[in-house]
Length: 251
Length: 217
Ligand SMILES: Nc1ncnc2c1ncn2[C@@H]1O[C@H](COP(=O)(O)OP(=O)(O)O)[C@@H](O)[C@H]1O
Ligand SMILES: [Mg+2]
Image 1 (cartoon, rainbow over the protein chains, first blue to last red):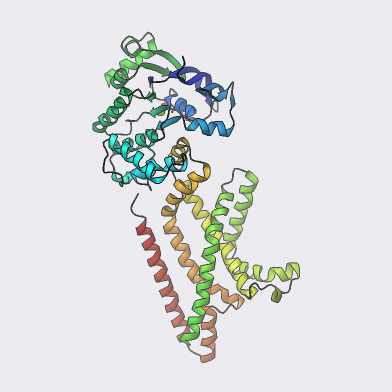
Image 2 (cartoon, protein in one colour):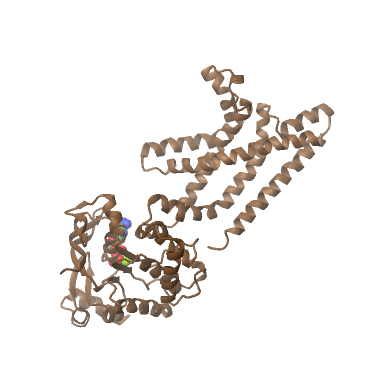
C-alpha cells in the first residue's frame, strides 16, 4: 500500500482512570473516505483530537506517511510535529472561526503566516476557495454576519487552503440547524468526488453510507466493526452495532 | 491662577501618560507570570499583585520615593535622570507598578475568557504559540477588556492627585497652594473642572475605541 497517509496502531488514551481509547488500529490510504460512527462518549472526538495533535496518545504508534508522530508511546520532537501539522486539516463541530477576522482573512492567515505566501497569492487562493464553497462575494463578511452553514463552509475553505493530505471532520453538521446540514454534506460529497482523503465522524448514517468507502463503528473506546458501508450499516455483524443502528432508526 | 493650574494639569497629564505607557505593557508581563506553568513563578506574581492591590497607593509612593535613601543610603538628589527630579521619577515608578497589577488581573480575566477552540484552531493551522497569542488571542482580549480598562484609566486621572503627597507640582498640589495663598475655594473648583474635563475626554476616547471594534462580536 504505497499511499498510506495515516497509520495508527495499538494506540490508547486514558483521562485519569477513564480509558477512552483502547488498542486502536486503523489505516487511511490516499483517496479514502472513512466514516466513523458510534454512540456519544465512545471516543470518536478523542481519536480525532489525538490524530490532530490536540491531545496525546498514552501509548501506541501513529505515522503520517514517512513521518512518525509517536512510536511505541514516544512522541517525536517538536519540529517533526510541526511538519506533521501541515499534512492534515481539521473541521470542528462548532467551526472555531476567528471572530475578529473576515472570511477572507480567516483563510489567508495561515497561508501567509505559516506557509509564507504573499498577500496577493494568499488572497487569490482564498477567493477561489470561497467561490467553490458558494460564498463568492462574501470575502469581507465577519463570522458573526454569516449563517452557521456559511461559517462551516468558511472553516472548510480555511482547512483546504493549506492543501492538507488528509482532512478530518468532527461532526461537521451537529451544530447546525437541520435545514443547513444539506449544504455542508454537499460540500463534503463534492470533495469525495475529487478524491480528497477524509475521515468523517458523523451521526448522519445515510450520508456516511453514501459518501464513505469504509465505515468504522466505535463503542466504549474500541473499534467494534469496520468494513464497507453496505456491510457495516446494512448487515452489521456485531450486536452493539445492530443496537446502535436500531436506536438511530427509531429517532 | 488658572495659568499655574494649567501648568499643574500638564504635570498631571505627564504622570497619567507615563503611567499608561509603562503599566499597560508591564501588566501584560505580570499577567503572563500570574498564569505561568511554573508554580513558583505563579506564586510570586500572585503575591506581587496582592500586595500592590492590598496596600494604599500613597504608601507605595512614599516607599519608592524614600526607599533608595532609607534602604540603600543613596542621597535622593543624586537619583535624577535626564535632568528629571527623582521625586517625579519615583511617582512614575509607583504609579506604573501599582496600575500594572490592576491591569494584569484585567488581562488575565480577558485571556482566560477566550474559548479554547481558538487555540485549537490555531494549533491545527500550524500557528506558533506567539503567533496564536498576538494574532488570534490578544486582539480579541483587547475588545473584551475595554470596559474594565476604562474604569481603571478614569481612576488613574483622579489618582494623579496623590502625587501631592510627594510635593510634585501637579494640579492638586498647586490648587492647594493657591487656595492657601489667596484664602479662596476657587482653585479647588477650577481644578475639579479640569479633572472632570480630562475624564470626559478619556471616556469619550475609550468609547470611540470600543465602537471602532464593534465590527465583530
Ligand atoms: N479532556 C477530557 N478530560 C476528561 N475526560 C474526557 C476529556 N475529553 C473526553 N473525555 C471523556 O472521554 C470519553 C470520550 O469522549 P469523546 O471522545 O468526546 O466521545 P465522542 O466524541 O465519541 O462522543 C467521554 O467519556 C468523555 O467524558
Ligand atoms: Mg464527539
